[in-house]
Length: 353
Image 1 (tube, rainbow, N blue to C red):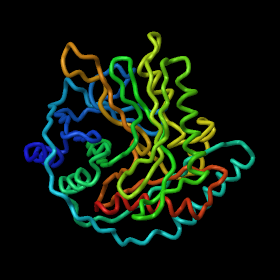
Image 2: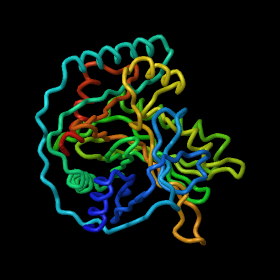
Image 3: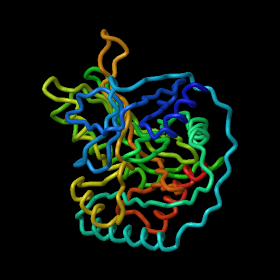
């Protein structure tokens, strides 16, 4: 691992683009190191490399091209880190703003304009001391069952995250996706009970995915809903798999899924419009997606893509860390409880700093 971490240090200090990432429950960290600082964008998702896409699907996704990158992969070997909760007061004004938006969302839901909308916020923290490699090591050590990454481009910025949510895994024409919704804090020795609000929220996302795949995929299979752990939080997850039709493309599949109701809402376009008009900040790459695009182990193997929703992430800029958190609002939501959920979610990243 030392060689890869040293390469991260030198590339970052030289202001050259790179990404390093660890896929869930694997033993390796892989990386793309670019020598060219020109920004390249995806045109049709037939490109090969590492893609970084924003929440707003009308904006272009950035690609680190496989053919223009030095690619590395090393076995993950790290000592465990002892992490402590950071004692940081939440901004009262941020709380008031968030609760106000949630209440506005609930009004839209009561009039049946929306079924669900995912309201998010940005929390800014001052960071006086910052060691990029140490921060990334902490994330790798703490979230081995997540997609853990550090991504940098001098014209865009520095992002890190540990996301539990897969947008899409596809090999050849066979794909797997998931709906991930509902959140509660993992408390030792406390019985696990999912309330109707979380169960309904999860079902809405699953139904959306199944409906979106009609016409572009076949052999659809939906697994039983299960509980998964991500850091100190628990979520509901339902896996969905299928085969892409001969007449359909990877781009169609991605456009059908992104953004899912797990990060946007339902109906999707009305929820997107509500968020653009009311969140009062730019999500940028938060709740977008990122990962490997059309890579092959050899000429004999099928192209594969592994894309993940950009959750549990932060952007670091000018000695400040911007932490992004949100929660799904449905008819059973309580505004004060939704604020507390974002506070719990923010701890995932705060503990790293």
